[in-house]
Length: 155
Image (tube, rainbow, N blue to C red; front, top):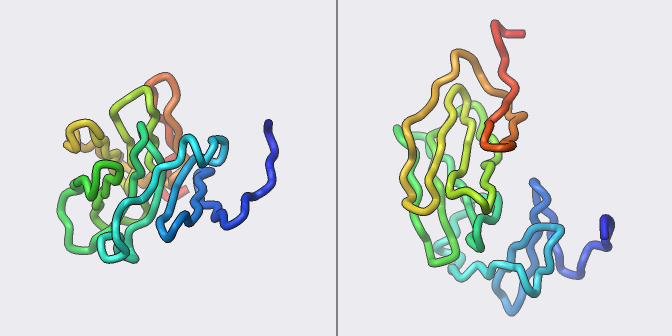
């Protein structure tokens, strides 16, 4: 089924992600999946999920949230719970949506002039790949090749 009605109590997020409240807890899922079967229950208190933490995607049954911080030199990731990973990134001009495919343990983020790669199994970042120019956020991963659009010489 290609089209479907928006479900009761459903919020739609960027990246074709959705969420619903169930018994006071948020459940997140991909738009094309069954929330009852495939949903990830966010088992964290509102105190743990800060306002600046943004739900980005689901990877292998875990919800990925990002948080951007001004005074952070290097990105880092941590488990907030068994089903929640928080990725903290230094402030840059933009944060591209993470590309995380269930067939790989890697998540890719283009942040300003750097490509950051996180191994979601170990929660370790690989060395950054620096671009000479600014990446504007139009990116994709296909067949293990990361492609993105960059601004070169200001054009």
